[in-house]
View 1 (tube, rainbow, N blue to C red):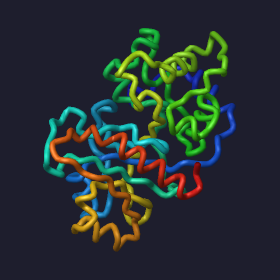
View 2 (view 1 turned 90 degrees about the horizontal axis):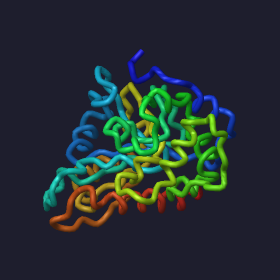
View 3 (view 1 turned 30 degrees about the vertical axis):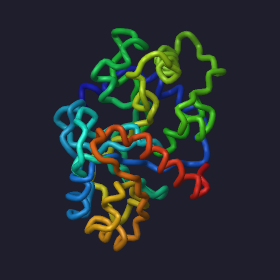
Length: 260
């Protein structure tokens, strides 16, 4: 057991009482164009050494929303290397899950959420049942609907027992409006996977820079029948400035597929 796995199970039990929200949403994985092209050549998304769960190699996905922002600190560039790519996995995805958290664990480890937590709260206190129904239960408990969750709009009418400390902390976190540290990472449901993910078996669509549509990467995606969702590229923009565009592309795709 990793040290971060130790914790109270109040939130886990509390969330497990709820019925999963519908419709079901896909898992998404964000990376950059350089890393994705290598993965596409290899055929798999491979687990990578983790800075939070040290000693483990993991693949990080999020439920429905591309909450992870690759290359947040990279400067503006005209090169494609660092541009974001978001992979939308099939709803039928059925590999084993390692862990689920209601937020980005990296941001927790960097104390971005400390304003909303008791100083003795640990990451393990927010670990949830590693089951694909769990994200839907989180949505029912805290957001009320999948649409609300996708727009990071919590159900503020819900009242929590004062002794549900973790639930109240999370509810305060996702309702925060006064800090730019509370971006989509604070309310995006994180799903960790410890095994390689076959791109041909499990990736349904890919949000990619428009420069890659007519390229070897685009040709490879078409051969695998992966739908290409391009976004426009502008010179001298920071890679993380594209993330709202990437998110919009995902939501548009869900709407076209009848998930909204």
